[in-house]
Amino acid sequence: MFKFDQKNAISTTFLSPIERVVEFIPRGVDGVMRVLSLSVDGKALSHAVNDGFVDVNGRAEFKLIYLDLDGAVCSANYNADFSVRLDGDVTKEDKVNVCLKVFEWSVSSSDTLTLSAVVKVDGNVTKTMPLNILTGAEDSFVTTDILTIPTHVATTSYSFPVDEETTVHEVQKVLSLDTKCSLTSAKVTDKVLDLSVDTVAIVTYVEDGIIRTATFNVASAESVSIDDLCEGDRVKVTPYVKSGRIVLHGVTGENILRFEGEIGVNVDVTRLEEIEAVKDLFSLTHHTTTTTESNTLTYFVDSGYYTEKIQGETTLPRGDDTALVGVPATTVFIAKTLCDDGLTVEGVATTEIIYSSGDDLYSARAEIPYSVRLDGNFSDTVKARATVIDSSVKIKGDKAEITLTIAFNTKCYASSQINYISAVELGEEREINRSGLSIYVANESDTPWDVCKALTATPEQILAQNPNITYPLKYGDKIIYFRRITK
Image 1 (cartoon, rainbow, N blue to C red):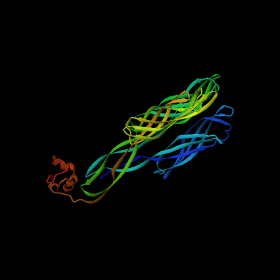
Image 2: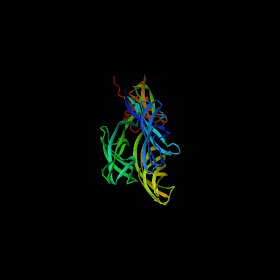
Image 3: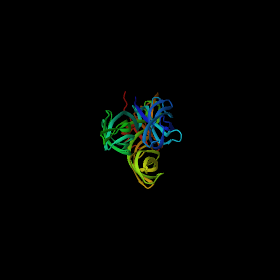
Image 4: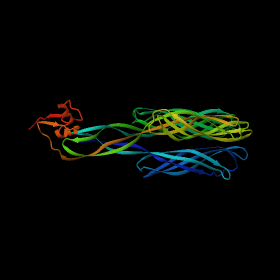
């Protein structure tokens, strides 16, 4: 008599972020005359989901360039592992994605060399919610509503190689490699996801006794096969750098500097299914009791890619006879986003500049606050990620003028509340009107249910004999119904 449809809806919630200071004291680093550059990357190594919280293991990767007591340029990489706990509405059955971002760092070398960084850890939770939705009822008058139900289609991972090379002179040593990537487009067709990803790698090295930097920009176009993917599905794509390295080869005096890396991509596919659900019902044959449930579902709907240029400057402490040596690392973080007929993104970009003054090497850090407006249709819940994809520094006197190109990746989420009947209990049988001719005299604002109840007939049967009927009824309206009597 009653038809139910079972759906496994998904809904996303967001964990409150945690900030954590990570410190590291390197062993075996003696005789540091001057630190030229410190950059820090962060990554989430693993996480364990528990009822009410998530344990996250992360890593801060410090990349240090310095001068030793003899004035030689040296470099060192250090990993500092740490753990944090994210509290929130989460259970062991939920799927959790964790993101880690470094947004502040420093180095102290007064007595003991100490590296420190401030990391921000946050995440989102995807819950699966079994729904039992009434979609049909025989021998009943029903009103219906269209519900949008987000369901999980597929989760997959994909990786691909990237590489680029350039010819340089004699390379004595490679000091550091800073690699970032960003998604530029994602196109969905049946069973195929076409991706475009830009990778930027900045390598700092010593050539003929001089520090230099080289920037590699690699544009990749990849196709990922997903059997259950259909056009119209919502696909959330998150690229990341799995690995990167610099390979040297060639002949003496003419080296080939080659960047080789691997980019990983996490893909989550969501389908928005529309279902016609019974909103309310009136059974002609029985008294009924219905159970109605209400859920708010939050789900991914769209992504975007934008590029913007920002500019700033910094004063160089030793500004006499200065020349740019290199920019070994740039980074950017987002402090907040504001939606108001568009999206305003605010944060700070940081650039590490190495420059020469006379015969000595020095460094300066430039912090450039920015506020950028991105035009588009954004939902109330939007997450944004920023990546520096190009940098330009010009030194004029004691000033360094900086221009950065920033790529912004956005992910928009929508929320909707659904109300549906999840259970129906049949009660006693109704008294059935068996008269051959019935006349119903309406009261003010009577509904179709009142007429159906009195005449024991469906709305379609009543309308067939009273084609001019309109609701709500007025006082005194008469509805005539003929019923065939069978013995």
